[in-house]
Image (tube, rainbow, N blue to C red; front, side):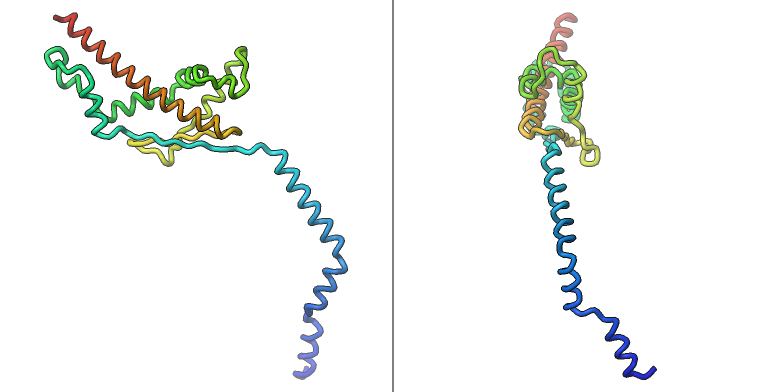
Length: 196
């Protein structure tokens, strides 16, 4: 085969831009129908799915300043309560707080007391399993959590309810933790008074 024949052979096998455009133009209705079907199915899918939102919150071990303020605010008579039993550590407070956050009954209490029954659309005779499935939707992100902080997330269809519930849960856990600290203090004083 000579070089002239091989050049002609390769020129016959090459596609030109003109040939490609003619091919596309001849099948234009096929391509238009495919694009319209794709657009319609995408639009239909987007309109039928429920969007899922996620709310996140992080809480940490209290700082030493906060712990010292808590310990100073407590009963300060060393003759009644021994020094070693009187001081609380940051980790103890963190664990007390975490206990409230992960208690299903505490979550249900916050859900009911803060009016989420009405916000979510539940009635008073709603099945408890529906309420528990809602409040147990709060999950801990174990990959981001450590011994000094925890990340909580909550997924659902209404972003304002999700974020408000997490905020209320944290605020109520704060209140309950301080209430527990006061109760511990009262129990220690009562025990020491009985001993005297």
